[in-house]
Image (cartoon, rainbow, N blue to C red):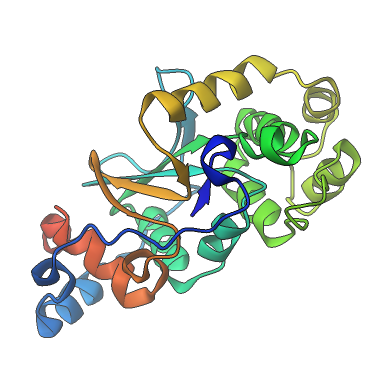
Length: 241
């Protein structure tokens, strides 16, 4: 977990295990049954929108039975570890299929601890991508091509170049928003929202209002861990689909 600079910006803390042993060690046969029942086809792109609070980016289909809320900083290397993990793929697939939705609060505190403005520029660009309906795809691209934490690598030019990897994202409105930091107010409000929610580092995972993990806890980074986390934390309705 990447801590805020006033806590220890260059330290990675051990993940906090907040699930109890019984929840983490659910019945394997039941878990297999639930996982098989997740595989129903859905059509069309997953809807994306800015929630009424003005800071939470919501990705999910109508009727999803639960919400995983992720707190991330684009410059955070531990966030990149999660985003490249089997657990992240499970969460994306579950969101695609309409079983859960995924909310994002995008922080930018690493700029203050490390210098530069890469996190702020990236959050601004992600907000611009949401306006074009390509937030989730661009979010995935940014983490796949995240520069070294100590390098202020999310420059305007690089953010635009990476946007070219997402079909349909580049255009006059998006490019101008990236170049002019059009969503600077959103960037500041999003960081403030993370602080207000009492989140001390990234990545942090809040499922249906309950903190379930942070850092690289195996309950969210492994395929089995994420499946069990989603199922045992209030997602028993999966079998009804």
